[in-house]
Length: 216
Image (tube, rainbow, N blue to C red; front, side):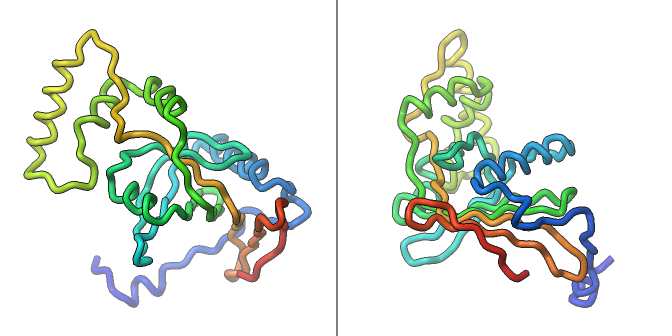
């Protein structure tokens, strides 16, 4: 099969599994997010905490990648990474981000925009200590987003650190830790027939969430 423009133009899916009305959406979008996340877990969606993280550099050029949600509360959405990575450099210069969750089996997505702050050292250390040892070593071994000569370079570094770490507690490196995206906008999207999708939007205005419906 060849991927042609015609082939792509004819790829269509009719969304019809559910509806979304403003009256059905909790007035607290974090509470609503948790409800939808629970539905995704119950539907046995593979890694329901997968989310796209979009950042922009100081010139406004966007970049996006997949990361994992590792915490959510009324303060915001948490993830962990290498502070020296491309995303970390973007966030240092331009501390704003967008997140997207897409659960195709439920024909739903959630879009989030907000400011970004580093989590405190104690919170990052507490999470780091829950990670499998191999993941802890991997966080130290990988100079994330930097050019490396080959795969062997990475594997040799991993094995070197592994041998030095046997029977020892692994300490979180200073260049690794967490961020929290503090939302200023959250949108819930439910696929509907004829592309007339339901979109319920929340904006943080004057210290409260304001709910509205958007056209698809």
